[in-house]
Amino acid sequence: MQECITALCICWMKGSINMRQVAITATILDKRGRVLSIGRNSYIRTHPLQAKCATAVGEPHKVFLHAEIAALIKLRDWSKAYKILVTRYTKDGKAANAAPCKACQHAISLAGIALVEHT
Ligand SMILES: [Zn+2]
Image (cartoon, rainbow, N blue to C red; front, side):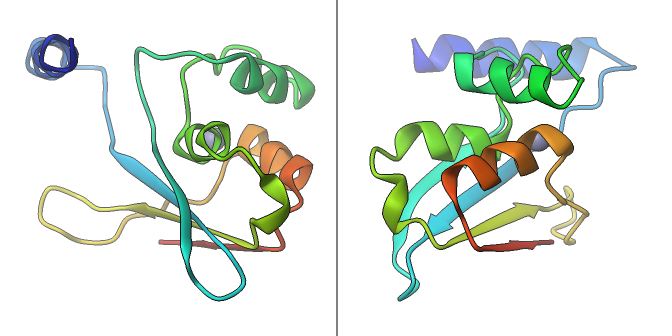
């Protein structure tokens, strides 16, 4: 299944000229810097939390999972979440802007995460 999804993503990337797909990773850490959860953005997966946050900020078209929300979904206990680190790197390995969008900022505040860091 995972291989099918990966193959599908590769097909999409090869086949589309206008569709710019980027890989963003969000890591949630506790106060001592221990990793609690890692999430990646997706162009095929959706989730009710994503829809809820996107709608709350007036951007209901953002249905596909963002990395920040993917990481939050995986984390059962939000109370230990202290920091979220959002990163994006280009093909050349250079850091690119990965500031959380409004929908993700909403989710981060719902979770009560105090610190946000991003590339
Ligand atoms: Zn977002």
